[in-house]
Length: 514
Image (tube, rainbow, N blue to C red):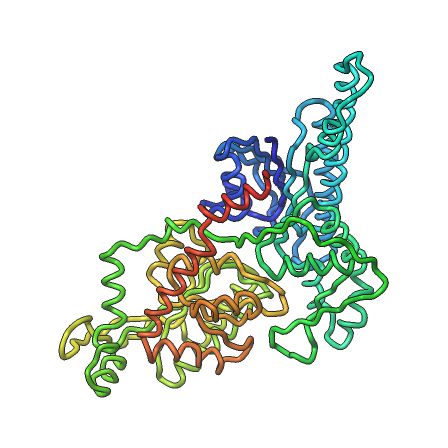
């Protein structure tokens, strides 16, 4: 098959050594023997800079559409970029099809967002299928025998034939619903549906006209079904829920109901589990360091003494540092520990973004970057043998490559998901990597990820912007390392069931192809 994958956001193979969703999907489809083209933008969403051309990788090719720059993720400049990407994709695709440089696609996988690209994909699909129909009619006329009648079953078979080209809409985010957070809460529910009507119309058209719909979260598939049922649903954060994660469906009357009998498929972002295979030696050393006698102590006194000299837990945040993340609360918690003379955990940041400079400055001002000497016990010694070890409360690693990320995650104990609940993110990329590394998560995101953490006993939730709530979540693990070790096993099992790309992307590929 000829398969086109259209997404301008994910990092390209020459920009990262960690494959994200669309690199993984293209690689999987190409590995099944299909001819794959990834259509992307020449402007990087992550670095906000122009991209270099990317050579063919993993048996698929990459085409870059020229687009204008933008500095902020929520801005008119970004919407202009998206419009130009959609138009540029359509023009280059149609030009290539007309002059014979491109073969007609059998499948077009379009990410949503951006809005508007799916509409161009539908035009390409209809043009391809129209030409295929014309060719079929001409072939039928040229091959028709003198006999004046045809089998009714043959005519029925032809009329029921699968279209030559299908469009699969792959939902990455709740657009335009996520833009409600930019509207003041008192006006959100009244003005949101009016201001965002053009975007709702585009999303509605995408869901209703798609041949199939896939998504990175069940909540996004539920959203698509609401659009299909009622023609219009806007998810606006409930102003009465403050920082809670509840959302209110605003069902607008006056829209015709549509059939929901459309193929749907859930495929989380996932990760490559083989990146996080711990050696038996590493696992034993890590387990010994975390739970020497404290979980097996015969007396409360021995357990308390062991906990007193246990090394601080290592918590990690991996990802972007933009306004959609409640990162300053992590600094506040570390500062409170310092003021109280406690050191239950050290917090590591890996990534880049607009908040990084402010986070570093605040950490330095509070003295959180300086190494402090603390007393820890050596594992499996009775009585515990102690030594003085330097630890910093906050550590910034910057942007890391694949191997460095693996090493950091495999040496950590807990993972942080500080996504703001108003972002409507279902299950972020980082959740898959955290789970694969066996790290229980502390999350303020709520929603679908919160439900998964509760179902699998794979982490704890805290309230956005509430340092006391986050402190309590840390304390749960620092004071009971048995729970920590149990949840490490649970979260890894969750990764194996839900986030294993070697399985889930094969299933997604079959959904696309069949």
